[in-house]
Length: 281
Image 1 (cartoon, rainbow, N blue to C red):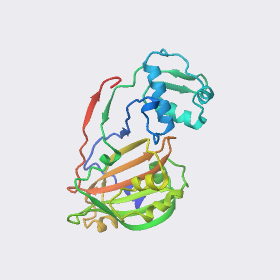
Image 2: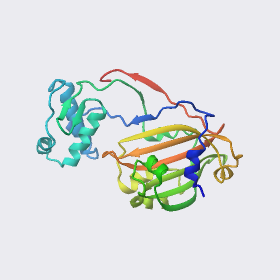
Image 3: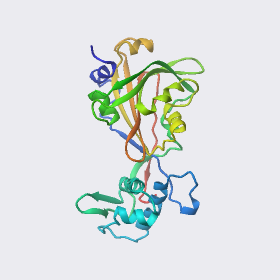
Image 4: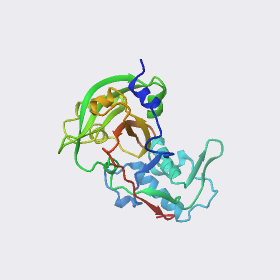
């Protein structure tokens, strides 16, 4: 019997969205000095801010070799893991290029220009016009098949926990979407709190496990609703729907949560506003 997640993949039809690219959303922060950083700021971010200022300020030229990881560990008196997280951040900004054979070099002395979505917080990604609530339908431990492994960026067979739920509006009870949320099995305790209030799952994860969100990726696609998911949302099988896949990443680049939501037509509008960010802006 074909699993629901496999049917999500097989049922893709070009009804709503065409040639939709993956949307990358990085949690942008401004550079600050050590004295300006709060006690709760991740150390890797403080180090990345310091190194960024040095690169932009002319300490290095394009093509120069960047200090080795163990030299930076000695300089900042931190672990190699912390340094690697800081360097990954600078690499994502286009300032560094890392190569195992040649070492890390200066790729640019200015952060890359890009079209970015400016967000006050990750909460803005939800885009729901009014308060909503998740109504859990089932909770189980799963091993990732090829589809889920791709969603979670994990090996096939990886142990995960999954909750299936329906999201609805609190004010009028309108059924907005069907959601499947996957987390690492060690975080399965988060599902005990789902549905008790309006907090999204990633926020509960942050509060329970002190997880730092480094970035979020969004993929938009189109599918046709199939049963039993269509039945839960009280729509006909075959109804066009928008699929919204979100991956939440920790600073080390690993995914800690993936959510896949199916929104039947006319029940959800997704609006994105982009601005052209100048170099260094």
